[in-house]
Image (cartoon, rainbow, N blue to C red; front, side, top):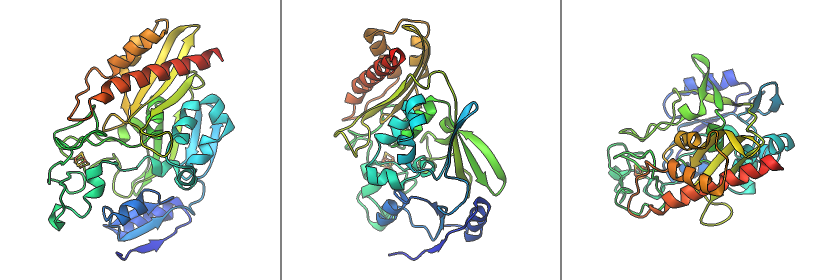
Length: 339
Ligand code: SF4
């Protein structure tokens, strides 16, 4: 057991100040469903916890005007069951409903969910760092130590966006749906508030896989904002896992369509479970524009989405699985157009 301090401020400004005052080793905590896990594995070793669950004004779901706005402290389960979100943006509700377990969805917040760390087996099971005598090198956990997954057991690893330093999959479902809808996050830090596209929140691993998010020291996500789109209602989040519940995606697709009869006016496609960041499939989107959607065209678009995929030792199956996941998601979403 490592000692740490704990405070529970009442306002966002007080939380920012508490983080700054705590200095190195500070972490925000809300639902705790990721951070406590990583502390038990000794991967995260915070010296100061800033509990933000009492912060006022960060727990509302607002669907109004030209946007949906979710406070960062809203539990995953609340959005998954919200009638307005279910009706108008099923891709958002489904991405949350298909994640984790009901107990975890009740605890975990939609802000914290965006900052989950990878489930790469070597990252999680090699806790303590190579300097502590661990078997597995991991550049994300212990920068410069190497990557045990490259050439190792990589069945769950990424086929898109990898680098020579890291092939770990971005684990979330919710961020994939948000990227498909061009959502952004509002963040607050010592230098004030700013907005970041969810697609820009995630860094490709490159040579620095330990730097995962485009957040400055001490910045906190306060809200998630989704611009309204006519494609919202004609959408789905389709996820393939080793088992039906409480499992991370082997491949997933967030799809939203704007249709004119059977013709695709606009397609939005993002991929999960196959890439190092939530992955927007823009070439696949373009391949559908102005064309009548059929199962054959949907599968062709799926293959376009994986045209640049590079398999490792054991994960080549993700390329065809991913293409078929995209195709099925497209047909499910299109079916909602007729509903
Ligand atoms: Fe670590 Fe990334 Fe390699 Fe996994 S893939 S062992 S997280 S460096």
